[in-house]
Length: 206
Figure 1 (cartoon, one colour):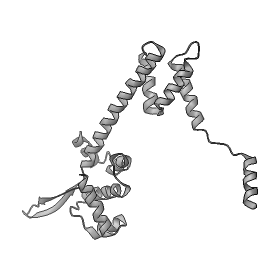
Figure 2 (tube, helix red, strand yellow):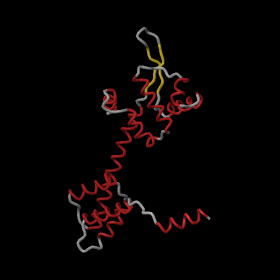
Figure 3 (cartoon, one colour):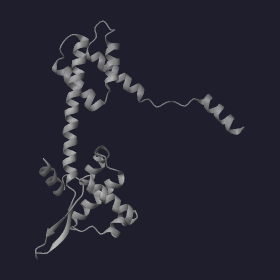
């Protein structure tokens, strides 16, 4: 999987920078470390195998000492690996790679999918127990949509289910309708209160 991801990046199908920006905070990296990784990968694409401290610190807009700390942190976390490689004329030269990020992204995606699958199972079990009947395939797909696309929480699900059960002919569709209304209410932009604004400006002028 890592080899395929690397090939897609090398071929320009995927962007290493985009992967870093999307996942760095989930992988325990700081913004500065993320920017450093992106720049390091750019250097590799430009066939630059040696990290020049002064030049690199200017790219990051940091002092050489802080830049060194960032690089040390990346090495400690495994995201930067500096080694010696043999050149065509038999000499040894410094080189580095930043491919560990790809392994971490793959691991995160797999864990995330496993967690979602576990959550879907929990949600389905809760609904089957609440309605005292097994869910249909369509109902299960709807539950999957709530979790993966709509981003509803389990507390929202429980609240909507309890409200739905008060209806005479409640169903998963009823729960879906209630969840949708709850979401719309949460996303409403609060309207300005003219009277409250008047009072505010009175206090400001005093």
